[in-house]
Amino acid sequence: MMEKHLQIEKTVLGTMLAENYLIADGGVRKDYFTSHIHQNIFSSMQALMVKNDPVDDVTLLTTMNPASLGGANYVMELKNFIRPARFNQHVEVIREGWKAREKTKILVQAQEQDWAIEHIQQTLDAVENEGNLGSETSIQSDLVSMGERPYEDVAYEPSVPTGLAALDKLLNGFQPAELIIIAARPSMGKTDILNHFALQAGIAGYQPIIFSLEMSRESMVDRLVAATGGYSRLRMRNPYKYFTDKQKERWLTVIGNLDRANIHIDDRAGITVAEMRAVARRIIHDDTEVKPIIFVDYLQIIRGDTQYRNRTEVVGEISNMLKQMAKEFNCPVVCLSQLNRGVEIRDNKRPVMSDLRDSGNIEQDADVIGFLYRDDYYYPETDQPNLLEIHIAKNRNGPTGTAVVHYVKETGILYNKD
Image 1 (cartoon, one colour):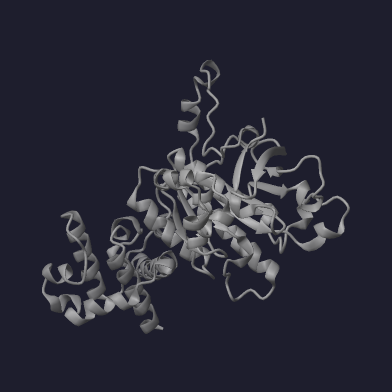
Image 2: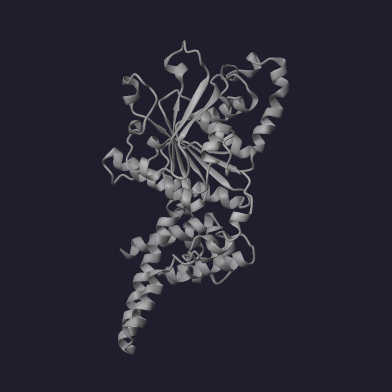
């Protein structure tokens, strides 16, 4: 058991060695480590951080006698224990171990010194609350800041704009700490609407982070270029052969416009929410001045915890973790979702809440749930082609309703109907 705990301590140190910002931001204390060598390594890391020096296996050995750090080989081997996706979980393990040790010490000391019951309880509570400090519970400051609210005009300012006026009117943009689920049957335009939202967010000065579990990074970039430049995706397969001279002349301008959106894409298949958090945390830390927005394509193929055997339970756990990620980074998380086949056997093909596939706790966890529907997909002869309905069926903090926009499936472009 002790050996396993020491390995967990190594993963915490190894991960901080790879991601230096976690030394200050990871919520770790020297006392959490049971090994004196590990305490020395962490102290050395902190000392290097204070001096703004790089922290790696070489610089660590310059801070004190290498033997105090376990020796050069021991420090180098920490690189084998890098686990960013499990960092929070491992920190919690060593923190809980520290709490157990501290409580034992307190009870022994209380018995020896005959502490009063109230003092024992207060001291134990202080240990138990370690790691939860800094959370303001009083609403007094909130009420003070609201004092002049009825006397000040508030301009309409959406949070992260969607670029679609009718949708922004319903949602007031994508809000911080909210989980937004966009669900549809295949070929309705889910990925194109995700790309549209990412482009609009990037253009507006936000940091779009896309986790594309189904589509490759290359395909996603091609789609983003097509939407940015208004290029047919069929022609994008071979621009040299199919582009006109005018389209070729605009190419570098289009690439430059897309570059300014500053989009990040992780296209690993079978990724977990914990791994997403690790990637997002690193990107956010690299540019703390830009507010992030996270996109996931799509919910049902996120790898869940193997302890769950029922698929509905797995998806429910994943949706809860996505909501927690939105709260942790205080940013919107927009996640695509599949619908079950029930839509196909009804006369009215417009989705409803019960069509959510493997729904689990999706309805409970999501702040916003939107369904996509295109009449021309089911009825090619319709007199209203190229229209996409975005039906907001749930909006925890606002109205529900339907936004209708133009959708050009050849290019992936969405724009306002009026």
